[in-house]
Length: 447
Image (cartoon, rainbow, N blue to C red; front, side, top):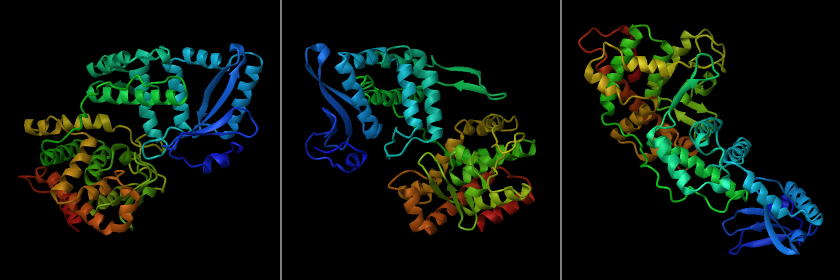
């Protein structure tokens, strides 16, 4: 028999059958390896408090605890059995006592340690965990937090889904940040994400041996709810007018430029606001993000976007590599944080026509990603190319594809940004003498 060590766990391979490898030193301690590749530590013993009844218990998943930790737990359970303190009764009491709030705390501890893996086999990004924690705190736990995990039923999940979908969990309250507020929304999309997170937490409970089945299974989730833009070009035309008026009426330049950069690149909102000068590679015309929703990512930098960034850099006084492209107005070494309110002001400017306001009802920073993709598609770009432009995780597009065909991606990025820029300017300066700045911008975009 082998010694169940880290080296053994790492090297043992799955077979067509469910196999258990028993340790050569600790009686009843073993490693179960399933055909699908999952590995877990277990212990089998005769429960002396129950007349020698044979018991088998899972200690933990091999990707969550080390072999050394599992061996220590096996010895502890043997010691309790010798004292006729049933290990199985201890486990059952723990199962009954743990509430969903307790389980959620354990889940986020494991996720923060990188033990909760995404479908790409990576740990969750810190930004994703922050959103998940907010979703659990404001939607899931108020309804189910005090309920024992073993008592949560599918009916409970159905009620949670209906409550979030109807807006029953919607609220606004002050946050710990200066002048900040927490805005919790509801709706079908939020409800779907809340139940999806709950499903992941319950899957974690199954792995820990706390429950046998996932109560979210079979719950009918709302339709995907992905937004499609009815008129992306009309949105860009109206946005161009709104940005021109906003600039003239004294809107924060950071807000206007951040929106323009998102439009010309397809970057996500947090990718724009968190951008530092170190991440902008002007020589190779690339934006190098050390972390994003899909991990480290390289994006092509269209010439029009590069020119915009060059102008922003010239305005800042000798920016350092670690400085934000869009710095906070007051707090040093912080990113600009006033974009949400600025967007509210920009889309509701009194000088906009009714048609322009209608077009801007679809506007959001995320809508600009859809717009960028739509324009690229209209120009003939393939799905794989668009995935490379936007940093989607499709077949390692983000890292591999751009390294092989960066000239092609740059060409498509240039064409897409040039078309978007022309749409932003199409109605913004109609029937009036173009500003010299616009003339220069158009010249830069066409280079």
